[in-house]
Image: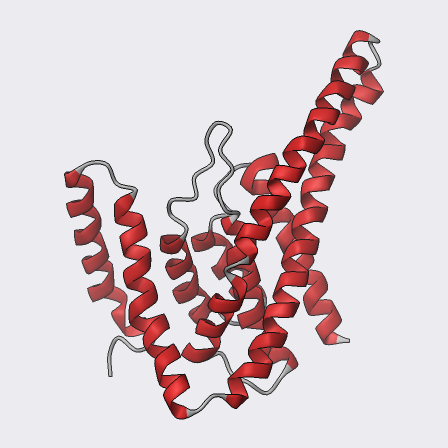
Length: 239
């Protein structure tokens, strides 16, 4: 029963963070660096979620919403990964270690593209809502007009709740299936991936989004400062 309640809470948080990303609030709570630690806090796994949230924020730094562009849905991708990682020890006997987080990233990251396709579907559906709003305004039907944004918000909430919950469940299942079958070499490779390769890739993505050299230098200095101050909390960085 606790597993069902865990997934129900995940669905609720997924819907709320999905709303924040684009449909309402827009307080940046849907960004991986906030959403993933919040998920970790809710499920008693704050420390690994902090590390994972920072990595995923770097990885999707270029997923910027502007104009008519539809980037990969970083909220869906990050919450699928984090949901699978933090729920795994609650439904299996596997701990959250580096190899588990790496597998969650590998299996969960493609869900950001599924989220992108869902966003495009919502955009097309919203055109019909806009037409309904125009018709209600012309008919001076205030009740019908007031229902339009509520319907739009509920669609976003439901879509993110379903996508993230299903994605996290499938990612969790794949991770639970693959992790016990790994050899020591496989575990070591995944540990190196999550500790070194993924941060390097994330930094490359983040720095590519910076247009001024001063920004690159400042970002590098800030990263080094944070690394020196908090490096003891990042798995694999110190002995």
